[in-house]
Structure formats: C-alpha cells, structure tokens
Length: 496
Ligand code: MN
Image (tube, rainbow, N blue to C red):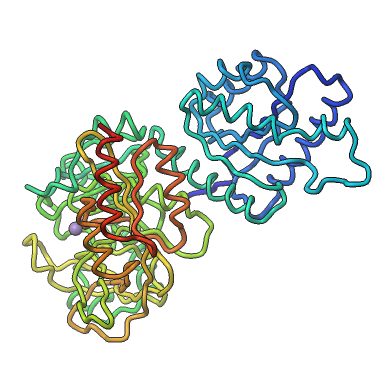
C-alpha cells in the first residue's frame, strides 16, 4: 500500500554565471554525482532527482514552481556549491510550497593541503555560499531543515533519510480523506477538535458518514468473498474449533469477516486513507469492528476509536513515515497502570482495536463479550508485542494551534499471562520515569489515544511537526518537570 520509492525529492544546486562555463560544468557534474549517490543509497527511501543547476532568478523560480506542481515531488534539497547571491532566491522561495532541506555540504570532504589553489577555493565555497542562502531563508521566516556534513557521511544520510520520511508523511496527508462513521464519542473532549482548521493546516479532510451507509455496503458483500476471508482467517490465526466453520460460535467470526470486507470496500471505493468509528453508533451492525479494524490498520489504514480523527490521521502519517522499516506503527491507548515503585509501567491496549502489525507471534482469533456498547460479542486478534525502544505521539487541538506531543518509552516483554483480559496489549516504561512522564503528559494536555511507534524516533516527529508548522513538545530521558512546565508557558506566549 505504501511505496516511498515512487516519491521524489528534487536536488537543486545554486550557482551564478560569474565563474564561467568551465566552472559551471564542474558544479553540474558534482551535483549530479551527489544526487545520484543519494538516490542509490539504501538508507534513502525515496528517489532523489537531479535538477539542472540554477544560476538566475528565473531559473530558480521556474524550478521551484515545477516542484510545487509535480504531484510526486515531496520536497526539495538545496545546496549552494558555489556562491549563489540570495536575492536571486526570493521569488522562488516565496512560492515554494514543498518542504525544504538545506544540505550544507561540500563535494570534497578534505582540504587537499598540498594542491589547494584559488580555483579550488572558488569552486568549493559552500562554506560561505550556503550561509548567504541560509540568511535569506531565515530572513523570509521559512521553515527548513539544515543538514551539515559531507554527503557520504552516514550521519548526514541518516538525517536526510529522517527528513524524507517526514516529508513523505506530510505529502500523504495532502488531499487525504478520512472517514468518520458516526460522530465523536459523546461528551469526550480530547478526541474532538476543529476539522476546518485541521484541513487548512494539515491538508486532509475528515467527513462523517452515517453508519447506515456502511451497513448497506456490509450487507451486500457476496457470500464467496466472506468464505474466502474465513479461509484466510483459519489459515493465519490460532482458532478453537467452536469458532471454525461448522462450530457453535462460528457466527461471530462470520459476521466479523463480513464487517471487514464491507469496511474495506467502503474505504477503497471512497479512496480513504483511514477511518474512525464509535461503539455508541453501531445501528444495524451486529458487533463493533474488532478484527476488521486490526487487520485494516495492518494493511496501512489509519484508525482510532471513538471518533478520534486526529489520531487516525496521525497513525496513517506514522505508517507512511515508517514504511519499509522493521517494526510497526499503531493506534494505542494508555489503559491501566502498574504502580510498583521499583517497576512502574503502563499497560497500553484498546477495547479491541490493537493493530495486528504489532504481533510478534501467531495471533489467536477469539470471541468474547465487550461489556460496553450492547452489541454481540465481537471477534478480535490477541497477541503479545515485542519489547524495545518506542514512542507515543498525540496531536491535540489547543484552540489556537495544534500541538504534537511525543513521549519516548521502553516497551517490555510481558512476564505474566493475562488469561482474563482477552485483548492484545503492550507494556512500557515511559521516559524519563513514570511520574515525570505521566505528569508532563497531563500538563501538556496529551490525549489517552496515541500513535505508538516501534520504528520512528523523535527526530522523525520533530521534522514532521516543523514541516506542518505546528508546536512540538517532547518528553524523554532529559525531561525535568519544572523546566517542562516553563516550556509550556513560554510556548503559550510564542503562539499568542
Ligand atoms: Mn479509546
């Protein structure tokens, strides 16, 4: 569903006519080598496309205008190999709508001590050419990512990789559609927000569909498709015989398969990238979608429960940013605590809808009562989740701005069987410690719903927030509660 190599980042090198044809040929040749090297590097997930070097205001304007209108161009990398007087960039930067990475590099890594002469100095002068460019971007108050170092340096490649992933997540949001079946869970605050402002700021649209529209699609799923999916369930998951075809409790699994196919068809027909539902609005549905949501998330759709469209969109963006990396991105909820001072932990889960891509074992397909919503017992996948570094991210609507809040956590392997809690779950220790992390999260107004990531770092989320132009707040190993509260207060002034 997500192939980042189809996306392009344009590599644009600035210069000027002052140096003569011979030098400009060398500039172009070097720029081509750098672009080709980035393009073929396994660390860079997108295609890097060399663009002819730009030497005049018109060339700059036209190249950046083309970047804007090229559908699969997700951002531009600029580099001033020589000096490119930055007033030439004003018109182009003024209209640039794609994310910008300024690569402050140099073709030669080392100074050739014994042979360096004036020609070498004139050719390799990004040390001051890039400062001239940097001034103009800062003077224009434009956001960009600055990456410094030799273009073959592994750290540099990693930073470019991170930014291209953030740009890909952002690109995916532009024009994206998220379906909301029913409205928000009644009276709930943090999952709601300003959908008009979100569309202005983030570029995706969220619209509500009556549950009857979905039920009509579910009821029209052909019998052979349901049987095909049941065959797949039986081959993929551990199931007790009463749930198999012919078993006493098979009907629940049959209904779940039908719901999955109906939801999938609705989302495919409408070209949606994610959805939300709520257990308070299931008229005409036999059960709350459990396995359906779990499997659709694993297929790449964004999802969050109870009408939480912001988290559904964030889960989708995280899936795009993490595409191809080992590990998963999933909808999560802080559910219950283990307050043992020596081993404090959060148990994360949801009623049913825990992303199947988190499973580190063959999931069990089980049917149990839900105890909420008053519908038939829903089918769900149950599995455990691997330990390791992870993070929780939450987007909240502060009224005058959106805030992206991230908490780094360390997931731990569960040591206990939980025979009476038939849902998939994750255990983690939030950084820097339970008390600081939970208090900080609450001071910052973070939601109980999050996007849980096993393969993204704070660097991805920070680049993403910068591209989106929203507030970014991190809770991690260095967080001190007093300083954190000050940061929140200072940001109140900044965003006033
Ligand atoms: Mn919830």
